Length: 195
Image (cartoon, rainbow, N blue to C red; front, side, top):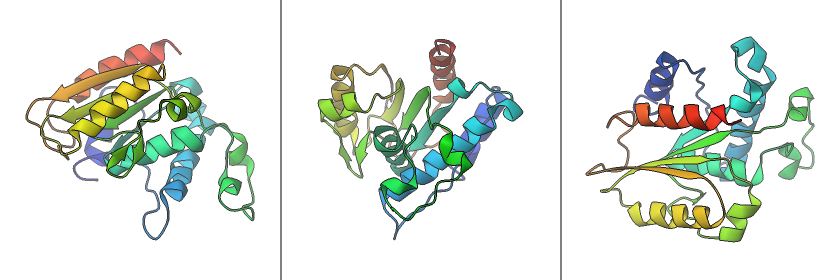
């Protein structure tokens, strides 16, 4: 959180965004359970949007590396009105589960839709996901450079609006550094204005 979550949330808050950092389950839990944690966070923000002074359509998610993969998992399989019963039939839905988990944009920061280390290249799966506009930011020295490019190519074939920001010489894990936040802000403002 000292390199990604909190500094980025603070930088975006200075630019006028209400920003939230979601803590999600890790091992021994699955990526799917973590995606449900993020979904719950999105539901909470949407349910309290008026209190935060935001429009429910102006909610976006962002993730770094594994956190981006988690956001992708949520957007592909656990958004809308899907709830914990998708993984556990004994789950008892509550009032918050009635709030749709919908977002207007996604930020993939040195990340992609797919699984750890392997980007999805399945155009039909990405099309079925009805994914929001997605901003990709990654470096030329990232070991997953080719995975980012392949995922972006498949997303474009699936009809997803994609914006890329490729940082020359940047490795994996650069966090809030490298000057990408103002470009993301400009892109996000344009995307959410269309909602």
